[in-house]
Image (tube, rainbow, N blue to C red; front, side, top):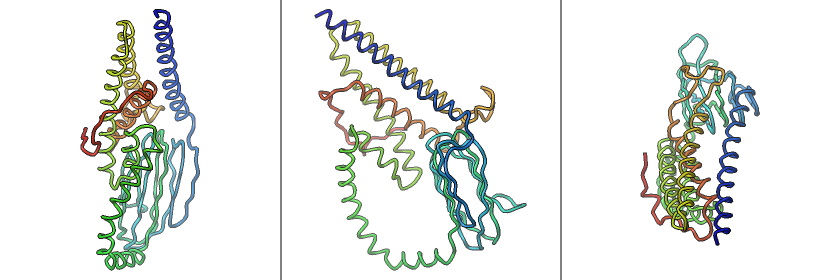
Length: 309
């Protein structure tokens, strides 16, 4: 019996070393890739639109858009990593839009004066996509009329569709994801109706996975017979905390050309905290899912009532 437990202990230690090595190596590879490459992706641009999709963006790109008075320039930015600086302006004038972001966002700017507007995008360790489109005033007017004509019908249908969609999503994502937490949160984070809703979901996702990880640790402790195994689990839990701290330090760096400790080396823009909270939740998830088996039962709770900051 002692030989069996010693073998089990060695397997657990080997797993912990292998898991932490894989995670740290992956983080290092991401960092090195961000350091050496200026742009890796695709680009499309003309007088009415500017679209880029990229796995690496460490440079500045510009595109001229032609807009008439009353038109709208709409922008959609997906940020999976790093940060973006966005600026839209007419030659010699103050920018009509300017922002630095570290999380996905959308905006719409109404144009008061006809002319050529330059869209400038600067990425720092960025991965994701951007899309800028000029929408004509005539098209918006037609859409407004159509919306007003069908508003009442759509409001009625929307309530019914929301209920049906919620049920369908729940059933579908339970099959797609390997755990109920991801099945609930990830589709809602991806399809959030606004940035505030997405950030709240990201914050709560981290809190739910942290408490689930603590429950997994308690479950593992109950399985242990010997104190040495329990001590090893405590060391493992501490190593996870250390991994999160180290990953945060690497993840926050967006400009590797600046020396450590200098201003601008790390990004802390609008939405960065919530984006990191999701990353931290994913670490708790990855560790937990490596430890549990078919006998583990997830905590029973209504995720819609969970609230973390």
